[in-house]
Image (cartoon, rainbow, N blue to C red; front, side, top):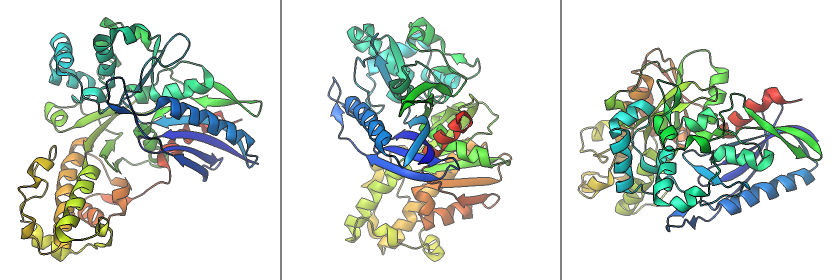
Length: 436
């Protein structure tokens, strides 16, 4: 049997169990997906009951697999999500989707009492993002569904609920507090006053400064269980452990997130307006980040390009980088005319200007990279002291994207560095020191 560390890695789409040996080599992966259900207001959300059943059943099945001897367990999940439980530890409501719209009357009531959106954003380093400011989810629940709210004994960030499933121990930790929740006053390094004034603090378990949340049984052995981590913060851990020089990480996918763990400057209004935000490391240190919805742009626009040029939906995968095409299309009108709402302008963009799919695709990536450079400059504080940028995720494999990034950032090394299961690996690395 191979001694190993297990990590449940719960993404919005894919739910995984991943095993690493003591050298942190990936040795096993199991993946599943679930159909979304509807919450009590009819909005799509994750099926919390099905997910918890899968985790417990997968753990029981792993106990019967004599190829592996699990010595520690941890969890990484998407952020901005709470599980609210009653005195018996049973969830009292849905796992609300962070994309669910925040009612305007409740949002207005909140900011009338606790300051303007900008003042609040500066205090908490969290741009105004509705339900993505997960602290406001609890505020919304209190006023939109007071009967449900009255049943809550504890509100657990999603990673800590997963840990609770296995340990029955309650905890709060920094990576979940710090992911644009609106809950944390970054200057005072404490909860924002609304958490106290609205009696939300009494629902939040104590903050754990250690990264272990008790133990669970594996084949009648007691093994340590981690507190759980927000996935974006977990993905940063392998890079922090292997670098002595300052770097930034561009994590690409549906969202392209530039992450700078070496930031020293406070957020400005301009940065927050341009979708800068804050994370915290598992040690509670502030991380400056900026977001761009590039993966979504790419998915929507390649569909339209395929339709216009009568190509397969994945034709872009065959397009190679040609600098002469970039030169041809540089001065063409932008396909992405608004980084926040590009679809509004797409119909006004005349694709007949382009002689080929290849031309239009080069222009699409050129526009994306131009916006990406702006986002990189915000998070990196104009590349202050930065020598390396790592690019992981899907766009690290896109030759046009990578070539244009390198061209536009000539003073730093731009390296494709896609770590296999990097989020899960971060969760495993935290548990290494607890191995017997």
